[in-house]
Image 1 (cartoon, rainbow over the protein chains, first blue to last red):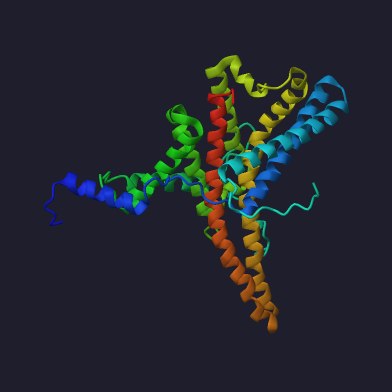
Image 2: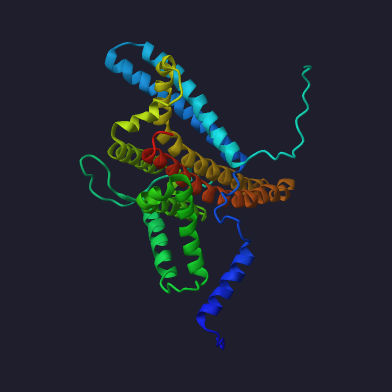
Length: 113
Length: 251
């Protein structure tokens, strides 16, 4: 409190120390690490949700068009496809967020080519 | 009953209120903890930001850190325009889920996010916001979401229904992810914790073994704190990604 420096000096000094402690360039918004269970639940949820929604939409179409069971069958098939699309999208965004280390040892290839 | 792992999710009315149009409107323990979560967040932010100092104190750093964290997240996922339009919405959702999850970590407390009604209501809120904002802002261009560019035209017969199903599956997976994580975590905790008194009651050598589930419960508790934060974060960031689709549907 006995600091006689003008406040701008004290502030810029503090700013410098905060930056040094934080490490420049490092983003404050690094996403927290995801636990494998969370990731697994995410994949499963995306896939299952699409199947359920596809089946429900197909069932709804059946209900209005009286076309049992074709709507349910087609809807479920499309639901599976949409589920795969969802899972691929999640996986793509995950690999974009966590790029593979280029120095990581490659998996040995047993195929003869 | 004390060993029933599902009992913690039992909803009991605290204040009986008359039914309105056939719906029970009683004030339940779930309502109490929702109000408590909202109240705790509001009180904390009011109290922490009261000094509004240029050089923040400890509590102000926490409050500003939370604000900056979500602000940066919305900016990264939805751009400046997203921040202007949706930041209060996303920040409110994040704080509500975070407070509900954290309050639920207290023994004997009720976890509101373990009820799918609560998570589904929030997911539907986001979903309807995306549709309304997308249609108002982009008009017919919003439907480009279902017709991705760069696809040979015969494939649209397959791709469009798949995209539509994928779009409608969002609120479901959005709601189920938060709900299932919290529900599974709390059941797991309760199951392992209930092994301790069971083994103690068995007597003899089994009493000595009760240290094992106790250690497991402590470890799981730490993990659950991570999950409580992570699920609030994941819910908020998915909200941002979906809202970004409403603003820029063309991919």
